[in-house]
Image (cartoon, rainbow, N blue to C red; front, side, top):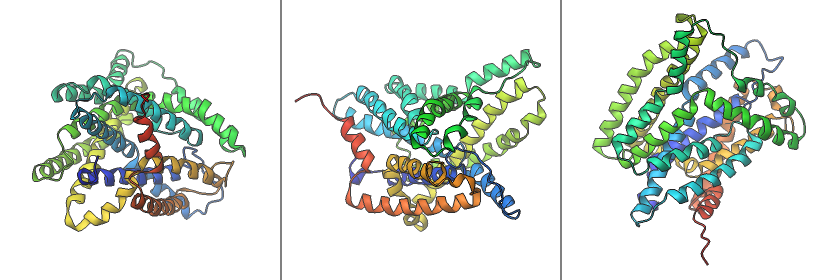
Length: 388
């Protein structure tokens, strides 16, 4: 995409997502949930408040923004090639395989990597790329409904006393301490790839993220087709309507999500039902964030302020992998091992400092380069040709 035609609001929105992910990953000790001993009593309620607030704002939403924008980026690249009478789908498949490689490298440092998830689920865009908008929207909505979990709800209604076992991923996550706490980086890499990656893939299915992510990829593609992120009076009205509708939907969904386990006594029913409602609740709030951010970015008062996030977004993959490398060193046993000493308050402070430093680096880099370092490699490998 040329500089003149860039959707800068998308860059800034992607930057917003990468910063929020940075803050979440820090308070999680980069996926190693550990409560330090010896924290002052007065600090513990503050830690809990920070934890609850950040997860309310960004948990299950930041990754969804990325998925939405991933689908949008696919449309832009596909459309650019279509204007040259070229079919981008095979090249996109190769691009996804490259992304899988980047994701596996990132997974060695941070098992919760989402690049591998997007690389796998991203293949759903290939068969729907040529379908009309109505058909794609219907498919996306059916996926957003969480069809597999509705099957589980129906099964639970038929057998309400059915015993439910713990999700398979839990046992694998429980093994993290064996390699995260150790001082060997090789053991950490091996554990993250052999145990942690399997746990995350299983959890992605168990948490309903497979259907949800596929739906968001398609919705992002449709947003590109409709040019919804182009600044225009019509689009401003669209985002204002989206903000209002999403906010109105979020309130009852959040109430149901918070109480469904008390309202429905059968575990066989309320477990899948809670997952469905939580998924919808997160998506409603995600659209509140996206529409609200887009409207604020289009305003004169906040445009320049929010545009500070654009360099983050323009090199989002570089920043994301950089976070994993630095974060694992800060918190894991092979590095500083700060998981043993830092609660959410300290971790939030560390996350803010890292975000500021990453913002300074991103601004400097993008002032001298067209793409981030890893984005440049990804781009060149994407368009590599076997022809002499």
